[in-house]
Amino acid sequence: MILGAGTTRAVFFDSGGTLATPTHASWWPKPRFAELVTAAGLSTPADDDASRAALAAGTAYLAERWRVTTLEEEHGVYVGFYDVVLRRLYGVAPAELLRALADAAVYELDQEPYADTMLVLDGLAEAGVRLGVITNAGPSIELRHRDMGLRDYFEPFVISAVVGHEKPGARIYQIALEQASLAPSDVAFVDDVAENVRTALDLGMQAFLIDRTGHAAGDQPGGGHSLPTMTALDELLSMIIGDPAQPRVADFQ
View (cartoon, rainbow, N blue to C red):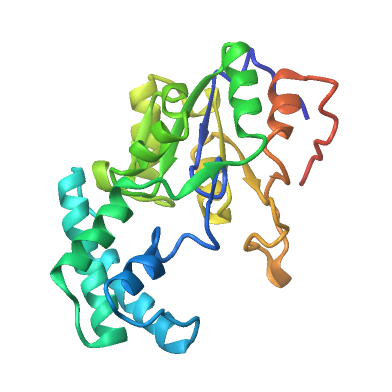
């Protein structure tokens, strides 16, 4: 399947799970949680049902306050998030610890590019393909991309919390298209969440599910995919540029 740089004028990417992976075990909790909690004199949090319940309560708090447009607002939301988590776990939430945890969540790097990310971005950019990001995240994701050396590749860079719309809703994709002055048929989209890919396809974009682990949630009975799927990002080079050195592309019906 060769889409061709002549017809594919741009590629829009999801961020986490597509371009970058967490530097610790998972995306949650945010950086240095155990380290900062222990340094404050509290017991090291266990990986148990109580911790998972506390994290779920904090995540629910975040979900109700996801619309933030500045780093300062995001920092305040994370103070509240950790207040919920700490009180569930320990019954206390020291103000100094809350600030330290929120500082880490907003300002510290907690992710790194996948091994193939820079190769793909460089290859597409050199071929004259425009690159963009559509991400469900807070404003600090832009700092993460700058710290990883990725930010300058992308325009548009559309953040759900800033624009007030989230994937898989159609509006956030439309905002990215409007900012780029492109039609849906001009753009390919890559995400690690099936329903996000489905929306892009419904809008008329070329779209692909990236399943790096083989465990992406399926959209078919039994967990299978009806979506065009890749297992590594470098497959985009053969899809769009037609590089014969990248032969691992499969067509999915």
